[in-house]
Every structure is written in structure tokens, then in C-alpha cells.
Length: 165
Image (cartoon, rainbow, N blue to C red; front, side, top):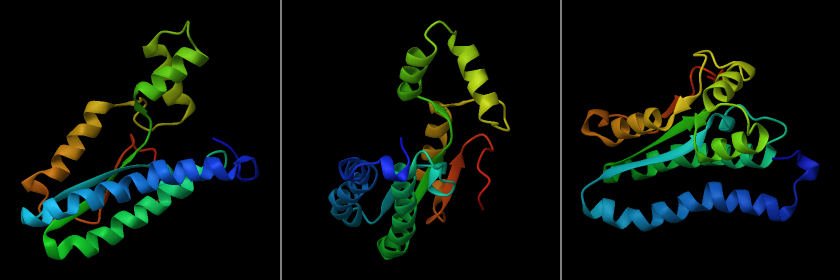
């Protein structure tokens, strides 16, 4: 987290490696196997920051936007090999990362109270923080035969918080 002039080159590189090159390396490694199998699915995990950046998260937002573009490009490039590429764009999901923040920032607050307060502060239209199982269900769908004509898409799992088209 940080504003543009506060982020060091090393921090920029860390975000690029983590959010961008991790996907590049994984796709390169998986591609020969997916092609040999006659097709498959790639589902990239992203965040609503890709389309709606926040000033205090400039590096992660920029790399996530790049990942969104990469996913769309790969969907076109890999389509002839019957490899479908999609993205799941996350909003506020209860994860270990958020649990660490809760324990650091509000150690005496009950988890249910903390997440209800967080959802209210973030103006999540559904009024709650998402659960990992809800994300997994979307990934499962995109990986299934039922999504055989879905490629190059981004599905937001964000409780309605995303405002970008």
C-alpha cells in the first residue's frame, strides 16, 4: 500500500513479480500440457482494483490492470488450442490476509462484528464480506464444461461493490 511517490522501485518490482509474472510463469508451464490434452481452462484471480484503482494502492492496482489485459489477450491467443482464459475479480473476501489485519487492528473485536463494520465502511451493497467458498464456486463454474463458451470474461465476486463497466 502506498501512493505513487512513496513506492520504491523494489516495491514496484515486488508487485509486478507477484501479481503479473506469477501468472506468466504458470501459463507458460501449463500451456504444453493443456495443448496436448486438447484444451483446458485458465482462471486468473484478480481484484476489483484492476478497473477501479485506489490512490493509496497504486502499484497493486496498476499490476492488476495489466493482469486483466493479459488475461484478455491470452483468451484470444489460446482460443485456437481450445484453452479458455477468464478472470475472477475479487472484492472484499474473508481470507487469512484479512484475518491478520483484524487481529492487528481490532484484536478485541469479534470477527462477525469486525466484518460487518468493514462491509458498512466499504459500502458493500450486499452488506457483508464475501467468503472464500463463494469465490471457489465461481472458479469451479468457469473450469467446468458448463462454461464451454465463456472466454475472455471477468466475473466479479464483490458483493456488488464494483461500479466499473
